[in-house]
Image (cartoon, rainbow, N blue to C red; front, side):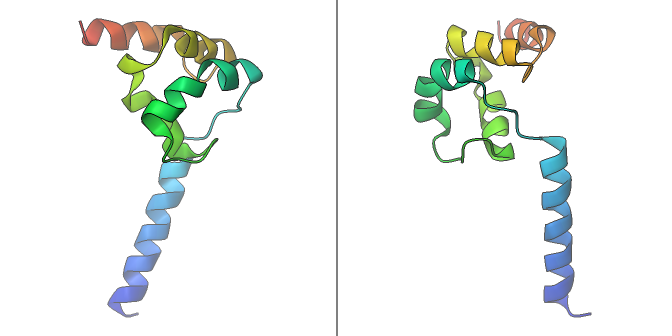
Length: 91
């Protein structure tokens, strides 16, 4: 097996593991409406529903609007406990 093939196999394995760890949430109408501004300002480089979008939203959690955060909690995409812990960590 040559180096290129080994690198490709390793890359595919990482993508599969990453996508399973950060599974894309279901997009509810509330999340779509409340997070529209947040998406365009912080994460528009990522496709709607993609695992990278989920990662981007989590990375920018402290900047997200309260309406977006509440919609994400209501949709079950993030827990209220997680949000509260992140807020305490950033104070």
